[in-house]
Length: 252
Image (cartoon, rainbow, N blue to C red; front, side):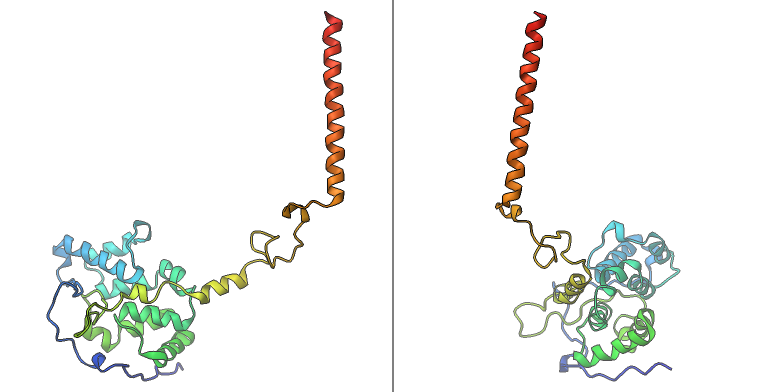
């Protein structure tokens, strides 16, 4: 029987109440998808916004034509579309597999709830869900939560909430800049998994002794072999030239 999700509290009082700010230039664009079937342009905008929210970009190679068709025809809701993007091979390859469970929580919560995690307590609570039940159950728990339904429902693409606060000259840094795709954890893991010495067996720490001639100081034995080869080649070439010249004179 899986453990229940640990209870967590918001880190700031502003996270406890709804925003009362009037819409402005920096307000997030919210797309209502209740009439997507009748408005193809609105569907395109929602799809673009969803890709950017989950992948941080909307490259053609990463798009899912079948999933987009289901949204356009009304077979799935925007919330279902978001779920499929989070469980896609693209997201698992670029985000899930190259991060620890704690960082996966940070990445997914930021995308789904539009806010940073409420400290280490929330990271631990959701990481337990991932460890016990896997990524699909974790994603479902977020999308089925009261927080998600109250803020986005079935027809809104998640967005970063409360970026602009009273008394601040500029808004909060966008989430994709706060939490890049991977950090030092993945780079260190790749270093540990790489073969000794990497692609260059003579690099530092590769385990092979670097030949002296690579440093511009050939060994005496190498110098002797090189001198013998040059001398032999010179004698052979000189003899060949003399032989050709003699043959040409004899025929004349």
